Length: 417
Ligand SMILES: Nc1ncnc2c1ncn2[C@@H]1O[C@H](COP(=O)(O)OP(=O)(O)O)[C@@H](O)[C@H]1O
Ligand SMILES: [Mg+2]
Image: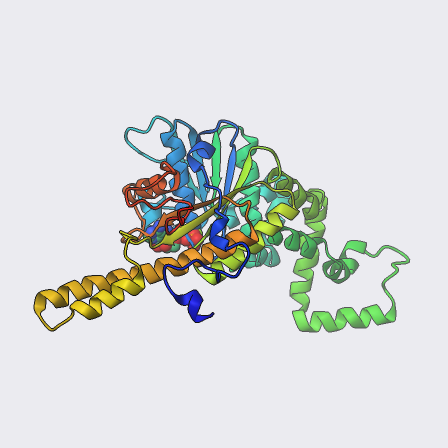
């Protein structure tokens, strides 16, 4: 990063660039219209870990209920205090009404229980006897509670169930705390590939073949192969997997079709993705990958929520000038020291906001079409209905100038033309 770029208050690119990044203003993201639109039926909040997906989902759901809609928010991993304030004291895997006084619509909330969701699929698609066999199978128990991707898969599954009932005007979906936002899109396929995959077919071939005469793979080489594998994995696990996959195969037409069906739901009209990121390089890089991926898959992106920004109270004084003024006034006198302190705090905020704006600009240069809504960091965590309301207001409030003169599509005001 060059020294010129670090200077607060300057555009994010050197002036010699033909088209400075700041000239490309990101379109504003009108989330108020999105949540109120009767055609909006599903909103999926994606992003890397810790950026505010769960909070944004809950705040958007509340805003939609305030706009008169019957909304359910499917949360995945709400922080305990947020869960409590939504009345989610225990995982029961069904939507529960949230008591929000004075709201014209309805807000319901649920917390995903991935094992219960998986169990329910098994029960719904097999005979009682076979369901029992599967549910008791140790391999199934591991898969349903800890396989990487099960949570993502089950979130989609639950979304499919909620949508199928057609009971909700709007479903807001939070996504699992994966390292990468792409996991939400990739995991179901990865999981179905795993279950339908060559490896598992090979491993379970003897069981599935059921002693069929002329079994092709039963060559000497293959026998050695399975013996080695069963040594590594353990014979019992292999038998568990075989039994599980055999039961699953007859239960419903394979995981792959099922994953495809839930995936298709995400491309249907009425579904919108909201990508959440914080103004940090890693989170924005993730957001960038995700945006590319959505567009490659033909999935509709509403825009980017840039969460936890730090707009300064005033932008009339640049960081450099505030620093210089602090130096100038700080002559040892107590009042002067106080003034200098205030100026230095301002300089720090300007520097931070400038850095955040530069990161946002970089994102906009790469994705000029992506609408952005910035949401300032609240003083503390967002853990109750009041906090969600404030956040909802920051997400959906009027998009023109805020009281401080900072348009919400940006951290810092745009340069006047
Ligand atoms: N705009 C905000 N201002 C202050 N705190 C926030 C804001 N957005 C989220 N948080 C806090 O950040 C933490 C992580 O948010 P969360 O929604 O759980 O992220 P994710 O679901 O992406 O992991 C929570 O403690 C939440 O209260
Ligand atoms: Mg979360």
